[in-house]
Amino acid sequence: MHRTTLLLTLLAATASAFAQQHDQHGRPPAAATTAWTTQPLIVAVPGGRGERAAPQFRTVGLPAAEIRVFGPRGGEQAFPVEAGATRLRSPAPESGNYHWLSAWAETPAHVAVATTVWYSSNPGPAPVDLLQHAKSELEIVPDPLPREHANYRESEKWRFIVRYAGQPLAGQLVRMETERGTRTSFTTDSEGVATVLFPRDFPPDAKGEEHNHANAGFVLSTERQDGDRHFVTAFNHIYGLDGERGRSLGWGAAFGLAGMLGALPLLRRRQNGKEQ
Image (cartoon, rainbow, N blue to C red):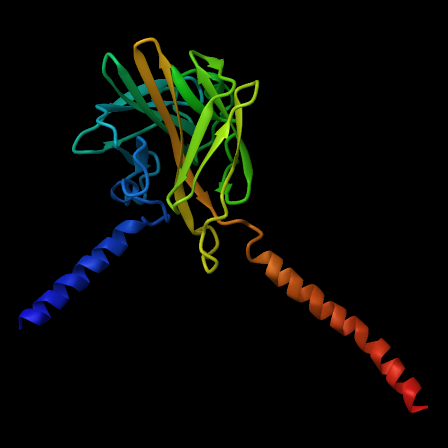
């Protein structure tokens, strides 16, 4: 009897842990992110279907009181974090496309900032001005962001600008961590740009259905000491499978088969020649 109860308890705990590893979009929820990084994060709260205009986010590793939303048309608004999460919406003037999310916690000697982006499917301007506008002292800014319905993918190179007080930082170390366990670093060039190579660290059998490819979280972080104040900033988002992961093998097999079929007439001619 005791063995049966223990077995059922273990099975329930395993099922619960598996369900928490990914939300409906394959994105790691807040509870899962603390295991792979100590950097401050802003992550989407699982669930909330049919509420695209008011998604829920929460901070991880950061005792922030609010999450500030910067809109693509220039507006910004702070939303208080209550019961561990907050429901966001586009600030006035309301718009679609990318929004910048920022949360921070600070003491007289230390400032920690977490940033990410939220994409709204409603029509809106490209986030060019949004990315150029400084939103914190030390920041990591994508240059550019993926287009609509696109994403960061393994094996791709993407540019990120590191700025302090609105100015690019040359020779600045940027660390990258992924939910898959990769740890690497990059250094900004003379224009403050770090060219980040996304690792090919998904398992060989990883796959996903159309519009729901397997993905994982990543975070880029950097820090700077300015007098008596220490700044840490992080940008987190998700990345997916290499788009060529399955095609290369399929095309290779197709070309191989085509080559074999093309060689058949030659083989037949040689055989006929020998028979004569």
